[in-house]
Image (cartoon, rainbow, N blue to C red; front, top):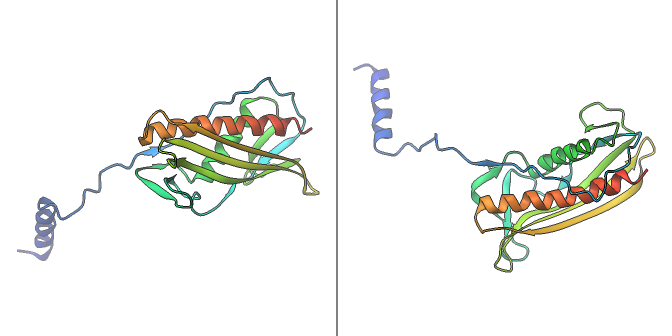
Length: 197
């Protein structure tokens, strides 16, 4: 028997015995599609905006979906991930939120090469499921700063914090709560930033 045939037979035998792990088991990836809830249509502004990726601590700057059951302890769900890191996902949804208003000349990422009149810098302080009181909820906290260019002067700071109860304790219900919480936070940020002019 040739060495190549022996190696193939050995690999097949190991797979049959269950020693080789199942590499085809898919990992569920989640995303959110937050909807804005605005009291009124924002007035049109004549400036261009670049949305920087939010800064975040390492515990939420990850594709893993964070949760907390006791104060100051971060854990992660085992059966699903975000489709991107939380800050990148929030950046993308923030850009979409501004675009959906049709009230701004142009909005894009900081890597898009736009000549921006303003840069929106933000800190993603909280983006985790919260089980500390026994019930399940999604907790989102964003601090956004509108920076006027080229002077780099902060002209507006908006703090948005929301906690939305989940319809259940499973991950699918938590993701729905995240979607609602992020929608509420972005609604506040979009409204107040577009009113800055």
